[in-house]
Image (cartoon, rainbow, N blue to C red; front, side, top):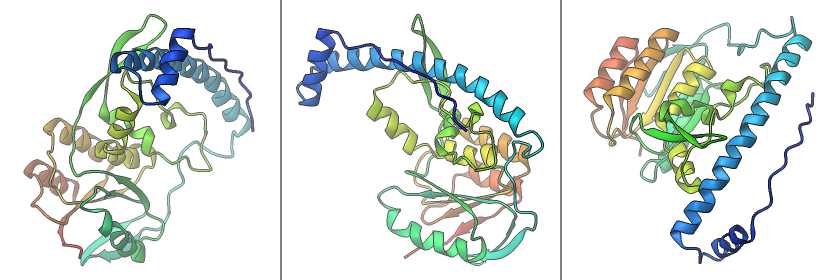
Length: 270
Protein backbone atom coordinates (compact mmCIF):
# COMPACT_ATOMS: atom_id res chain seq x y z
CA UNK A 1 0.00 0.00 0.00
CA UNK A 2 1.48 3.34 -1.06
CA UNK A 3 0.40 6.90 -0.36
CA UNK A 4 2.57 9.25 -2.46
CA UNK A 5 3.19 12.70 -0.98
CA UNK A 6 5.33 15.26 -2.76
CA UNK A 7 7.71 17.16 -0.51
CA UNK A 8 9.89 20.06 -1.60
CA UNK A 9 12.80 21.68 0.20
CA UNK A 10 13.82 25.24 -0.54
CA UNK A 11 17.21 25.87 -2.12
CA UNK A 12 20.01 27.24 0.05
CA UNK A 13 20.78 30.92 -0.26
CA UNK A 14 24.24 31.85 -1.52
CA UNK A 15 25.34 32.62 2.05
CA UNK A 16 23.98 29.30 3.33
CA UNK A 17 25.57 27.39 0.47
CA UNK A 18 28.94 28.97 1.26
CA UNK A 19 28.64 27.94 4.92
CA UNK A 20 27.55 24.45 3.88
CA UNK A 21 30.51 24.05 1.54
CA UNK A 22 32.86 25.14 4.32
CA UNK A 23 31.15 22.71 6.68
CA UNK A 24 31.85 19.83 4.30
CA UNK A 25 35.52 20.82 4.38
CA UNK A 26 35.39 21.17 8.18
CA UNK A 27 36.19 24.87 7.90
CA UNK A 28 32.88 26.46 8.92
CA UNK A 29 32.85 28.69 11.99
CA UNK A 30 30.95 27.22 14.91
CA UNK A 31 28.39 30.04 15.03
CA UNK A 32 27.76 29.81 11.27
CA UNK A 33 27.38 26.04 11.41
CA UNK A 34 24.95 26.29 14.34
CA UNK A 35 22.89 28.93 12.50
CA UNK A 36 22.68 26.76 9.38
CA UNK A 37 21.71 23.68 11.41
CA UNK A 38 19.11 25.63 13.38
CA UNK A 39 17.43 26.93 10.23
CA UNK A 40 17.53 23.46 8.66
CA UNK A 41 15.90 21.92 11.72
CA UNK A 42 13.08 24.47 11.62
CA UNK A 43 12.40 23.59 8.00
CA UNK A 44 12.70 19.87 8.70
CA UNK A 45 10.02 20.18 11.39
CA UNK A 46 7.76 21.98 8.92
CA UNK A 47 8.19 19.07 6.50
CA UNK A 48 7.59 16.55 9.29
CA UNK A 49 4.31 18.27 10.15
CA UNK A 50 3.17 18.05 6.54
CA UNK A 51 4.07 14.37 6.43
CA UNK A 52 2.26 13.75 9.72
CA UNK A 53 -0.89 15.34 8.28
CA UNK A 54 -0.66 13.11 5.20
CA UNK A 55 0.03 10.06 7.39
CA UNK A 56 -3.09 10.77 9.43
CA UNK A 57 -5.18 10.41 6.27
CA UNK A 58 -3.25 7.27 5.34
CA UNK A 59 -3.81 5.94 8.87
CA UNK A 60 -7.57 6.24 8.51
CA UNK A 61 -7.57 4.68 5.03
CA UNK A 62 -5.42 1.76 6.23
CA UNK A 63 -7.83 1.18 9.12
CA UNK A 64 -10.80 1.16 6.76
CA UNK A 65 -9.17 -1.22 4.29
CA UNK A 66 -7.94 -3.60 7.01
CA UNK A 67 -11.05 -3.65 9.14
CA UNK A 68 -11.51 -7.13 10.57
CA UNK A 69 -8.01 -8.22 9.55
CA UNK A 70 -6.07 -6.62 12.38
CA UNK A 71 -7.09 -4.82 15.53
CA UNK A 72 -3.94 -2.67 15.42
CA UNK A 73 -2.31 -4.41 18.37
CA UNK A 74 0.82 -6.50 18.41
CA UNK A 75 0.05 -10.20 18.44
CA UNK A 76 1.61 -11.79 21.47
CA UNK A 77 2.58 -15.42 22.04
CA UNK A 78 -0.43 -17.16 23.57
CA UNK A 79 1.52 -19.75 25.56
CA UNK A 80 4.07 -18.45 28.05
CA UNK A 81 7.52 -20.02 28.00
CA UNK A 82 9.42 -20.97 31.13
CA UNK A 83 13.16 -21.14 31.42
CA UNK A 84 16.28 -20.25 33.36
CA UNK A 85 18.51 -17.29 32.56
CA UNK A 86 21.77 -17.48 34.49
CA UNK A 87 20.05 -19.66 37.06
CA UNK A 88 17.03 -17.40 37.56
CA UNK A 89 13.62 -18.89 36.78
CA UNK A 90 11.61 -16.76 34.37
CA UNK A 91 8.26 -17.11 32.63
CA UNK A 92 7.15 -14.92 29.75
CA UNK A 93 4.90 -14.88 26.70
CA UNK A 94 6.56 -11.75 25.30
CA UNK A 95 10.02 -10.95 26.65
CA UNK A 96 11.79 -7.63 26.05
CA UNK A 97 15.55 -7.25 26.61
CA UNK A 98 17.72 -4.13 26.77
CA UNK A 99 21.48 -4.72 26.49
CA UNK A 100 24.09 -2.19 27.56
CA UNK A 101 26.41 -1.90 24.54
CA UNK A 102 28.75 0.72 25.97
CA UNK A 103 32.49 0.18 25.48
CA UNK A 104 33.03 -1.76 28.70
CA UNK A 105 30.05 -4.06 28.08
CA UNK A 106 30.03 -4.61 24.33
CA UNK A 107 32.14 -7.78 24.45
CA UNK A 108 29.61 -9.49 26.73
CA UNK A 109 26.28 -8.86 25.00
CA UNK A 110 26.54 -11.72 22.49
CA UNK A 111 26.90 -14.19 25.35
CA UNK A 112 23.93 -12.71 27.20
CA UNK A 113 21.82 -12.73 24.04
CA UNK A 114 22.66 -16.40 23.43
CA UNK A 115 21.84 -17.33 27.05
CA UNK A 116 18.42 -15.65 26.87
CA UNK A 117 17.58 -17.15 23.47
CA UNK A 118 18.06 -20.69 24.82
CA UNK A 119 14.76 -20.31 26.67
CA UNK A 120 13.17 -17.33 24.87
CA UNK A 121 14.09 -17.50 21.17
CA UNK A 122 11.60 -14.82 20.12
CA UNK A 123 12.62 -12.18 22.68
CA UNK A 124 12.75 -8.55 21.54
CA UNK A 125 16.35 -7.29 21.86
CA UNK A 126 17.36 -3.62 21.97
CA UNK A 127 20.78 -2.10 22.63
CA UNK A 128 21.55 1.23 24.28
CA UNK A 129 24.90 2.62 25.39
CA UNK A 130 25.06 3.03 29.14
CA UNK A 131 23.45 1.88 32.37
CA UNK A 132 21.78 5.04 33.62
CA UNK A 133 18.25 6.39 33.64
CA UNK A 134 17.51 10.08 33.26
CA UNK A 135 14.69 12.37 32.25
CA UNK A 136 16.57 15.03 30.36
CA UNK A 137 14.58 17.95 28.98
CA UNK A 138 15.15 19.16 25.44
CA UNK A 139 13.84 22.13 23.51
CA UNK A 140 11.80 21.36 20.43
CA UNK A 141 10.88 23.59 17.51
CA UNK A 142 7.27 24.47 16.80
CA UNK A 143 7.01 26.06 13.33
CA UNK A 144 6.10 28.30 11.66
CA UNK A 145 7.23 30.91 14.19
CA UNK A 146 9.92 28.77 15.81
CA UNK A 147 8.45 28.82 19.33
CA UNK A 148 9.93 26.40 21.81
CA UNK A 149 8.29 23.49 23.56
CA UNK A 150 9.81 21.08 26.08
CA UNK A 151 10.27 17.40 25.28
CA UNK A 152 11.75 14.81 27.61
CA UNK A 153 13.95 11.81 26.93
CA UNK A 154 11.21 9.33 27.86
CA UNK A 155 9.28 10.49 24.78
CA UNK A 156 11.89 8.98 22.47
CA UNK A 157 10.61 5.42 22.70
CA UNK A 158 9.78 5.59 18.97
CA UNK A 159 13.54 5.33 18.24
CA UNK A 160 13.62 1.82 19.74
CA UNK A 161 10.35 0.65 18.20
CA UNK A 162 10.50 -1.95 15.43
CA UNK A 163 7.33 -1.87 13.37
CA UNK A 164 5.63 -5.31 13.35
CA UNK A 165 4.02 -6.53 10.12
CA UNK A 166 0.47 -6.64 11.50
CA UNK A 167 -0.02 -3.07 12.72
CA UNK A 168 -0.95 0.20 11.05
CA UNK A 169 2.38 1.64 9.83
CA UNK A 170 0.95 5.17 9.88
CA UNK A 171 0.21 5.17 13.61
CA UNK A 172 2.10 8.21 14.98
CA UNK A 173 3.35 6.31 18.03
CA UNK A 174 5.93 4.60 15.79
CA UNK A 175 7.38 7.86 14.45
CA UNK A 176 9.34 10.83 15.76
CA UNK A 177 6.80 13.26 17.24
CA UNK A 178 8.83 16.45 16.90
CA UNK A 179 12.25 17.73 15.85
CA UNK A 180 14.67 18.78 18.60
CA UNK A 181 16.59 22.02 18.64
CA UNK A 182 19.90 20.22 18.84
CA UNK A 183 22.78 19.69 16.43
CA UNK A 184 22.27 16.37 14.60
CA UNK A 185 25.35 14.59 15.95
CA UNK A 186 24.42 15.51 19.53
CA UNK A 187 20.85 14.44 18.93
CA UNK A 188 21.98 11.06 17.59
CA UNK A 189 24.26 10.55 20.57
CA UNK A 190 21.42 11.26 23.00
CA UNK A 191 19.18 8.75 21.21
CA UNK A 192 21.61 5.83 21.23
CA UNK A 193 22.32 6.42 24.94
CA UNK A 194 18.67 6.64 26.00
CA UNK A 195 18.13 3.51 28.09
CA UNK A 196 14.82 4.82 29.46
CA UNK A 197 13.43 5.20 25.94
CA UNK A 198 14.51 1.64 25.08
CA UNK A 199 12.76 0.23 28.15
CA UNK A 200 9.64 2.31 27.51
CA UNK A 201 9.50 1.19 23.86
CA UNK A 202 9.40 -2.46 24.86
CA UNK A 203 6.68 -1.81 27.44
CA UNK A 204 4.46 0.61 25.56
CA UNK A 205 5.04 -0.21 21.89
CA UNK A 206 5.86 -3.91 21.96
CA UNK A 207 3.63 -4.77 24.92
CA UNK A 208 6.10 -7.09 26.62
CA UNK A 209 4.98 -8.85 29.79
CA UNK A 210 8.54 -9.28 31.10
CA UNK A 211 11.51 -6.92 30.89
CA UNK A 212 15.19 -7.88 31.25
CA UNK A 213 17.89 -5.20 31.47
CA UNK A 214 21.56 -6.21 31.29
CA UNK A 215 23.97 -3.49 32.45
CA UNK A 216 26.88 -2.83 34.80
CA UNK A 217 24.84 -0.37 36.91
CA UNK A 218 27.67 2.19 36.91
CA UNK A 219 25.71 5.23 35.71
CA UNK A 220 23.41 7.58 37.62
CA UNK A 221 19.76 6.71 38.16
CA UNK A 222 17.26 9.59 38.30
CA UNK A 223 14.37 9.21 40.73
CA UNK A 224 12.08 10.89 38.19
CA UNK A 225 13.06 8.27 35.61
CA UNK A 226 12.38 5.46 38.09
CA UNK A 227 8.91 6.91 38.69
CA UNK A 228 8.17 7.04 34.97
CA UNK A 229 9.39 3.47 34.50
CA UNK A 230 7.43 2.19 37.49
CA UNK A 231 4.20 3.81 36.24
CA UNK A 232 4.64 2.04 32.89
CA UNK A 233 5.48 -1.32 34.49
CA UNK A 234 2.53 -1.14 36.87
CA UNK A 235 0.04 0.00 34.23
CA UNK A 236 1.00 -2.85 31.90
CA UNK A 237 1.58 -5.59 34.48
CA UNK A 238 5.24 -6.10 33.48
CA UNK A 239 7.78 -8.01 35.57
CA UNK A 240 11.22 -6.40 35.61
CA UNK A 241 14.51 -8.33 35.87
CA UNK A 242 17.73 -6.39 36.31
CA UNK A 243 21.00 -8.17 35.50
CA UNK A 244 23.91 -6.28 37.03
CA UNK A 245 27.31 -7.51 35.90
CA UNK A 246 29.23 -5.15 38.18
CA UNK A 247 27.95 -2.81 40.87
CA UNK A 248 25.04 -3.27 43.23
CA UNK A 249 21.96 -1.66 41.63
CA UNK A 250 20.62 1.71 42.75
CA UNK A 251 18.30 1.20 45.73
CA UNK A 252 15.30 2.88 44.06
CA UNK A 253 15.74 0.77 40.95
CA UNK A 254 16.10 -2.38 43.09
CA UNK A 255 12.85 -1.50 44.88
CA UNK A 256 11.12 -1.11 41.53
CA UNK A 257 12.30 -4.60 40.51
CA UNK A 258 10.93 -6.02 43.75
CA UNK A 259 7.57 -4.29 43.37
CA UNK A 260 7.18 -5.59 39.83
CA UNK A 261 7.67 -9.20 40.93
CA UNK A 262 10.98 -9.59 39.14
CA UNK A 263 14.47 -10.25 40.50
CA UNK A 264 17.97 -8.82 40.64
CA UNK A 265 20.50 -11.04 38.84
CA UNK A 266 24.11 -10.63 39.97
CA UNK A 267 26.20 -12.48 37.44
CA UNK A 268 29.54 -11.40 35.96
CA UNK A 269 30.03 -12.32 32.32
CA UNK A 270 33.60 -13.28 31.46
